[in-house]
Length: 483
Image 1 (cartoon, helix red, strand yellow):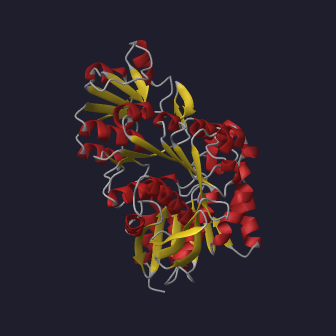
Image 2: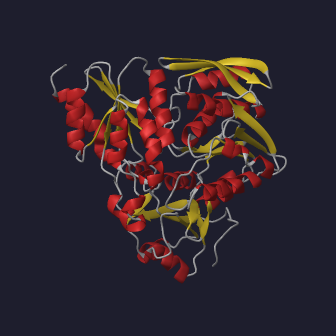
Image 3: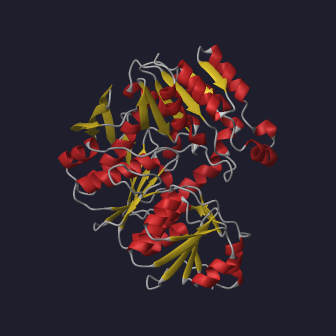
């Protein structure tokens, strides 16, 4: 059986290779909710995804072997993009001619088709923008479906199958599967596309910025003439794609040329207020618990989409004002001895800078201690070295953890193509920022607990677990004597 592109919704049994990935787990949950028999496999199965799937009653098989498939006898196999062609189960699927597809194709074929597809794309801000839009539509009574790469606190789950006509989904530019090297987001067939920003990222699959731009070009050209693209009018790289669009092109941002603008921004503790201006005319003044100029832009894109989906300005304002945020996006993990410890997913220089500057707005006058783990392959790139030197200037104290994939990176690209931590630290010190690298997570926690004083804000940033640094810092703070 060849790669299945048009999926028959009458199938009964679905097997997922790589079931513990965030989006794959969402797909598994949706399949289970719709009445399919679901099973799947993964390596090194551990919480929170293992317990999340177990609560849904979905069996997780540890490791990859054809025996799993032989026993389950699926009608369809969904192969995650972490599985190579040499994966034991993927190879078994090909050898035994089983029908297979990719995760984004399965989500579209079984859940998005027939609904208004709203795809949120961009290098940064996808999870926040997707979660916020889903909540704004929900608060307005639209009951949207959604899939997002995080846990929105208003829903406390990363997917939902709603009764309404909209399906809001986070659109990732990463490749789809070993048999489909195109970006995931093209498979969601956007009716409305939000295009937040474009920068170089995912260095493990993109050779450079031009390759990233070409991926986003596919998203833009994939929106039909009767659709709409809501694009960041302040991003010159995004603007380069306007000529390729067949759909209506609507811009948002801070510049005078944008269709939807944010003006008179007032940032304060716990809330940001701004005036929405449409085509040069004041539309409404709104307020959000989110902090930072980047989140004003995220909110503005969503306001434009919600308006075009028929949501009134008061309902938009109400939804925006009651958004609770997302786990691991400026998530406060605890306060001990007056020190606030925050977890954030930032792992790209731009995201780090916007996170730290947003913290300045949210916690004015307080000292910011930034902890960063270069976790992903992309985050260690030499190209980002100068950007890191600027990004961390928004902090008062910086501690860098070890490069997580150092050996793997050196073997793949060579040491000369990896960022120099010493160069970054030296540049920060020259600018008056106290900066160090510490190789042990317990030592990082000890140093933070020793140095931190009442009122400080500690922000730990990583795309992974960061060695449980948040709990370690909180425990170290609790064990020490008050300052």
